Amino acid sequence: MDSESIELTVDNNTLTVRAERRAPMIADGIEALVAERPHGVFTRQILLGDNLDTSKIDAQFSDGVLTLSIPVAEEAKPRRIDIRHDSSKAEILA
Image: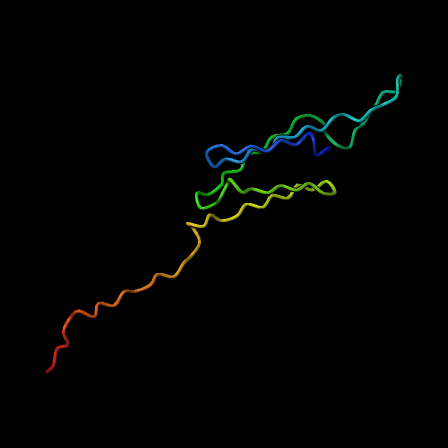
């Protein structure tokens, strides 16, 4: 499959992968009886969580493998919450 035939789109946290595999070229007058790999248009949709940063999706195609990296949004990452100490209250002596 050619990397140029792959199309990635994101819409409302839905990632759509669309690709087209063309039929193999056969010389004139030769008819293929069996093809081991299917050809045509393929589409897959993946629902992404709200905690992912879809504006920073990275896609790489190498050796026939499509790899997607989708980072977690900064707002969704765990963070430490500081506790304020109120020192204005008077100490109670017993």
